[in-house]
Image 1 (cartoon, rainbow over the protein chains, first blue to last red):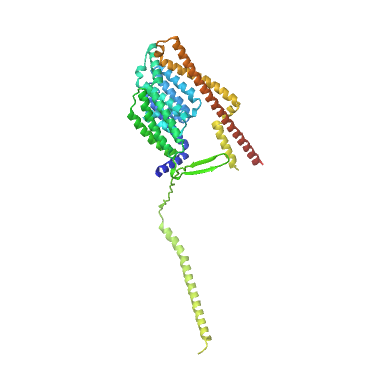
Image 2: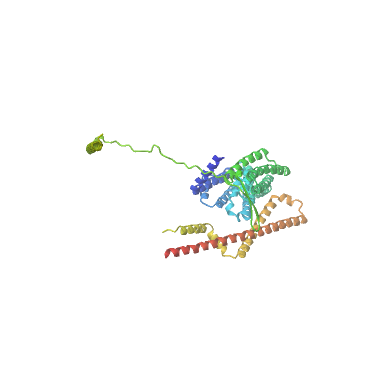
Length: 366
Length: 131
C-alpha cells in the first residue's frame, strides 16, 4: 500500500512539474481514442477515415477546449453517416441537437464526459463509468452518461446493419429513416443500460457521501452489484438478451478500477479516526475527522564517489626542475633550524649546569 | 523594485480576465432579474425546439403503430399526451433555468466585485510606489 502511495506522490509531483505537457498529451490520447474508434467502426467516408485525419483532429483538439472535441466527433460521425444515407444522418443530427439543447448549453465544460461512455463501451468496461462518476461527480452526470449510451448504441446499430440502412430512392430513404429512428430511440438494451447506470450512479453517490467508514469501498461494490441486479431484472422484464458473463466480468473490472480511483483520490486512514463533540449557542456538533494517508516520496540524492577528473600528460623534467629549485631553500631552512636547535640546546645545558653548581654551593656543608 | 504583493494581485487579475472576466462583465451589465428572465426565455425556445425534435423522432420511429387504427379520439389523446409532456418538461426547465441563471449572475457579480477590489488595491500600491 505504501508503495502505491509513493507512486501516487511521485505521479503528482511529475504532473505538477509538467502539467501543461501532460494535459496536452492526455487530450491527444483521448482524441486518438475517440476519433480512432469512430473511424474504425464507421469508416464509410474514406477521406475522413484515414489515420491522418484521426491524428490531425487529435492534435488540433489538444490545443482547443474539450467541447471542440465533442463538436468535431459529432461532425465526423455525421460525415460517415452521410455516406450511408441522408436519412440516417438527419436522425443522428437531430439526436445530437437534442443533446445540445437539454444538456450541453448549461455545462459546456463537462461535455467531454459524453465521450467517455462510448469509449468505455468500446473497451468493454462500460460499468466503470457510473461507478467512477458516482465517486467523482454528482447525480447530474446521469445526463452525459445517458447521452453517451444513446450515441454508442446508435453507432453500434449503424456498424452492424449499415447494408440494410443503405437504400436507394424515396422509399429506401423513408424505410431507413423509420428503422434507424426506431433503433436509436426504442432500443430496449439501450434503455436497460441507461436505467442500470442511472440507478448505479445515484446509489454510489449516496453511499460515498455518507460518513461511514470505508464508504467508498462499500459504494464501489454496491454499485457493481446493483449494475448486475438491475440489468438482470430489466432484461427479464423487457425481454432483452444480455450476456450475463460479460456483465459480471465487466463489473469485476469496474470494481478493480474503482479501488484504483479510491487510492488516487480518497486515500484515508480509518484507524486514526478522531471523533469530537462540542457546542455553541445554537448547535451541538458531532465531528468525525479522518486523516488523509500521506506518504512523502523519497527524494533521490546523488552523491558522486568517483567524480570525473581530467588526466593530463605531465612533463616530468619541468617538475624536477621546479622541485630542485624548491629543494634548495628547503634544505637551507632545514639546516638553519638544526643550527638553531643545537644552539638552544647548548644554552639549556649550560644554564642547567650553572644552576646545579649554584645549588651545590648554597647547600650547607654537613 | 518589484513588489511581490503587486505581482500577486496582477497575476490573480490576469488569470480571472483570461478565464471568466469577459463573460462576467457581460453578465453583470444586466440586472439579475433581467438576465435570468432573458435566458429562461431563450431556454424555453430551445426546449420547444428540442421537444419538437424528440416528438418528431418518436412519431417517425412508431409511425406504423400510430397510424394503425387511427381515429379522431386516438389522435386527440396523442396530442393531449404530447402537449402534457411538453408542459411538464417546459415547467421543469423554466424552474431549473431560472435558478441556474440566477446563481450564475450571483457568481459573476461576486467575482466582479472582487476584481474591482483588487483593482483599487493595485491602484493604492502604485500610488505608494510612486511617492
